[in-house]
Amino acid sequence: MRDLPGETSDPSTGSGTEGGPGSGLDGVRVVLLAGGAGGSTFAVGLRDVVAAAGGRLTVICNTADDLWVHGLRIQPDVDSMLYGLAGVKDPVRGWGRAGDSDRVSDELHAWGLGWDWFTLGDLDLGTHIARTSWLRDGAGVGEVVARLGRRWELGATLLPMTEDEVDTLVEFNDETIHFQEWWTRYRAQREPRRFANPGIERAQPAPGVVEAIAEADVIVFAPSNPVVSIGPILGIPGISDAIRAAEAPVVGVSPIIAGAAVRGMAEMCLQVVGAECSATGVAGLYGARGSGGLLDAWLVAEEDEAEAPRVAGLGIHPSVRPLWMKDVALTRALATDALTAALATR
Ligand code: GDP
Ligand code: CA
Image (cartoon, rainbow, N blue to C red; front, side):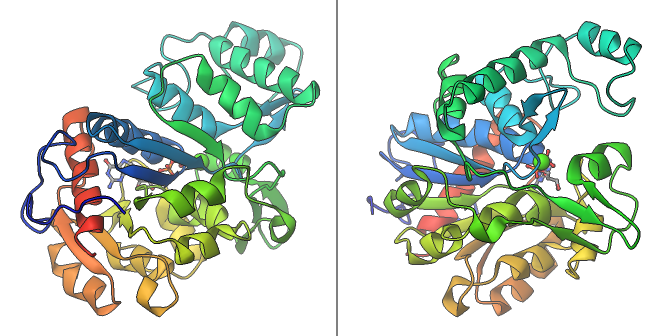
């Protein structure tokens, strides 16, 4: 464990210098668990803060959204993270490459291939072709993600949660579809009976995942979908246990602000698992570390200040902060708040 903050800033009222000298974050080693859109937006701010402190960031990415399309392996969350950290993500759509075009997808549609609800950009397809050819040459998923990451200066180590193929399936009474179809085609509006990750009980954490968790000074749960982004990561045997056993404090950022998912479709996911769509509901899913769960601290939006006592009642330290990641400066401040709140629990 590195030197603690506490003297430098009060997590309940404000943040310290963002990762710079005197922030109490010198050399901090951080592990982030994350999905795609929310996860990669947060990761950019966290990367900046950790880099300014001379620390190290390892991102453990959800891979349960991964799928095969046209013989190519697609990793939606890994790619959002990769493009986000590289600064090449489309800022408007929030996924895919900036300035991309759809020439190849149009051509595939002319051949009667693909679906009208799913398009892959030309630059993006380059990534999928590179990934698939390395996989076919025998490289493991972790190695492939590392190779993708080497192209840009990411300022973080990117790890898939597992090298095994674990899908999130969405089950209805009459059929089962891949998560990607439910999310993209049905916009997560059609109510499923349940989510399933068949075979997850036999999956193993990717190389480096358990080690990074054990060596971390702070473990952070991104403001990602708790059910279909963070949920599968925690479902890989060994990952939750490694977090429980870690010396580092664990902090999460609520993806729910004022009772609604921000720019996301998490509401239905929470409903399906029977959780309340609120900051407290999500905190309750992760649970308090003191009672067999995972969280030491939880960042609650200013809009949800009234929920802080309920979070505290779960045995988790609430920290009421601005949670909107409207720009990089706000996201950096949020990342600093998360690290500070975590370290203040020790
Ligand atoms: P996905 O894999 O692309 O679905 O993305 P993630 O699971 O990483 O993130 C989706 C979640 O990010 C949504 O459920 C939103 O609630 C959350 N989110 C998006 N923008 C913000 C923001 O500005 N602040 C917070 N606190 N959460 C956000
Ligand atoms: Ca995702």
